[in-house]
Image 1 (cartoon, rainbow, N blue to C red):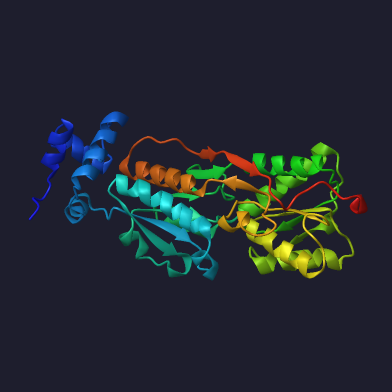
Image 2 (cartoon, rainbow, N blue to C red):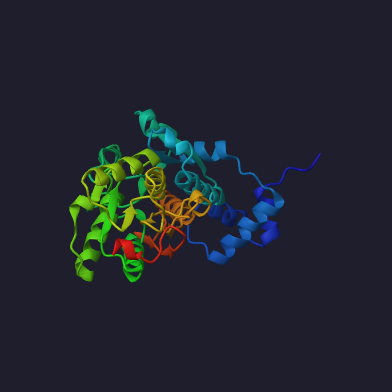
Length: 335
């Protein structure tokens, strides 16, 4: 039988004291990045497993952080939440934490006893959960900014740059009549992306035709429905932007069903660079933001907050514009 590895074995392998190993695993005291790296490497190589139950009893903490997600059937198939969870879990394990999924409809007063803190997703302009967690003093950080001006512990993507590059792309292709499919207006990310779209019209000297803009649910059906609304007004853009890739996919399907070709008859741009966007035909021109990295940054920020360590806040991550098959030069018939 293999001998059980102890904290002293890890300390001996690294050449530090057991207290230093404990400090690394507990996230306490100031430890250099190099020492932390060596300790965590030894923990992995020796397959050392800390006694989490004993640590939790001593510290009066659960060493569990939660990913707070909407109670919606789509989250089970949405790569956004899967990537955020993957990034969070990797960082959490490094610091001796585990990650639990907390659904918004399963929220109860007992959540405070089961977790030490939360990473919030899909914040609304007026988010009741932000106020609730503040009131019960449950530590949290957010993937997104929300509408609370006092919120500082959040991780966001550089949405402005992404939308600017996307609009400039279709403008260079000759498009001047641009439409927009908005997701649910209560969400900050929907409004932020649309605000940048509107600002770009002003910068490029383009008139904003509100008849070319419509709202829908953040789904394939929502994208198709918003596209249907625009067509019912008797107007047609030469290029359409969507709040998300899944809405862009719905718009493309609607156009195909009505005998229109993408991008020959209309160019389509999404946002997110969801997994499917590169595999559908035509592949979707989009803006990539690294949700896996956002999950890592959010977990690091939350755990540092819980452990009383300094951390950078807020964090803005870069994005990357990804041109694909769903956009092309405007056709002569559309000019």
